[in-house]
Picture 1 (cartoon, one colour):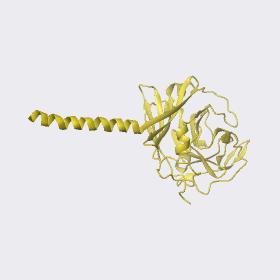
Picture 2: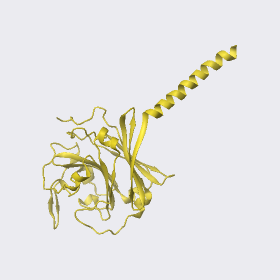
Picture 3: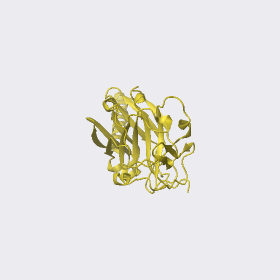
Picture 4: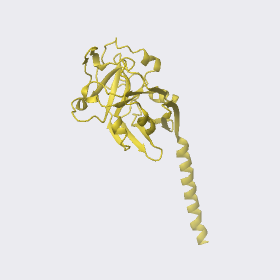
Length: 264
């Protein structure tokens, strides 16, 4: 009798635990979209929990970082290495459309960013909208994140790039501290604009930093006056998976209410 009284509660507890675990797994789901870049598979994803998007990111194989041409010809405007669509859930839940990757073999102005590096643009514009950016619209946003600058940069032989606008990309706002940095560039979080509105968020990371094969994080600024339906993250981390030889670029901290009305 005594043993039966003990066994029954434990069985009930185990049943509850197993059921709760199954419900949690069912409530959390991941949608992926993949593309081939220099013989490597680059995948984007969005993670939802109970229907709410909680994570947005991309998987970047170290083989891709190692395979890029070190003496690539400089062209203007810069050519995208690849675009990878984001899962449809990223569009409906967060307003993000696709990832565009640029390889800058020689870096680019301002001087801080002359080291060879990768641009990982997470766009809330469609690919056709990005291709239509010709920088003829010099409208700057009503506000940019605190501690950020949106400089006009004079490029010899090219003239002034208002807001550091690059055709087929947009304007680039960057941390003031990074602009003032004189040491070797490692990584920075940029915010892109065009037509006065937010267009992308961009972890820009040097090849040397990625080849260290170690985790790192970057501060993500508060971006105000977002277009309707667009929600930007507040946290970013890069996780290196040694077993899979790849990085996971992960954005989190999406405001459940959405920050699109901030600053209005």
